[in-house]
Length: 334
Image (cartoon, rainbow, N blue to C red; front, top):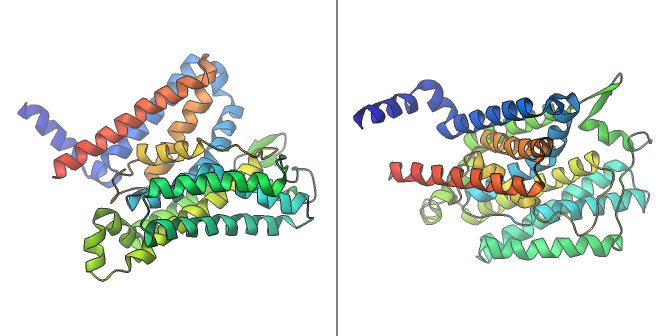
C-alpha cells in the first residue's frame, strides 16, 4: 500500500506532470490511444480527409467549449450555446443572402447578437440570481424560436466558397493545389493561448475563478462580483458567435430548429479537459484536448461500424470518469 502511495506521489510530484496537470496527461493519453485504436481498426481512418473532418467538427465545438468554460468556472452553466449558435448563424446568413449585406456585416451582427444573449444570461444569473440551469434553459428555448421566426423557418446558406463573398470560408480551410489545409487549427491554437493567459494571468480570469471558488468571500473582499459574473457569460456569448461563423464556414447550410445537444458536446469537452462542475477551476488547454476526444469519437466510431448512439455511450462513460477524477481530486485537497 505504501509502495503504491509512493509511486503515485512520485508521479504527481514530477515537475512535468505538475506543469501540465494530471488530468491533462490522462486526457492526452486517452486521445493518443483512441487515435491509435482507430488507425489500427480502420485503414480508411488514416486518410488525410479524416483529419480534415476531425478539425471541421472541432472548430465550432471548441469555440463554444472555450466560452462555456468561463461559465462553468463560476459554478454555473450555459445551455443556450447549442441552439444559440444556430440562431446567430441564421441571423447573420439571413442578412447576407436575403438583405444583401456584406459578409463582414453578417459576421459582426452574428457575434453582437450572441454577446447580447450572453449579456441577458449574465443579467438573469448574476443580477436576478436565477439558477444558471433554469436561466440558460430559458434562453436556449428563446433563441431556438427566434432563429426560425426571423428566417421564416427556412434553411439559410451562407455564400459558397467560389463566390465573391465566400472568402470567409478560407479562414478555416484553404486550398493548396488539389488538397486542403486546415488553417483554422492555427487560429484555434492562437485563441486558446490568448484565453489561457486571460484566465490565468488577468484580473478578469482571477476574479471569475474566485467567484466559482467562493462567491461570498469574493464579494466581501471588495470584488464587483456581479460585473465579473456577467463577463463570464458575455465571454460565453462571444465565443458562441465565433462558433456560429465557424459552423457557417464549415457546412453548406444552417437549418432552423437544430443545434440542441451540441451544447452537451462543448460542456462535455470542457469537463473532460479538467473544468470542475462545481466551479473554481478550469483549463482552456484542457478544454481543447477534451473537445478533440469528442471529435475523435464522432469521426472515428463510424469507421469501425458503430452507430452514433455508441458515441454517446462512450462519451458518457469518459465524462463520468472525468467527473469522478474531479471529485477524487477535491477530496484529496480537503
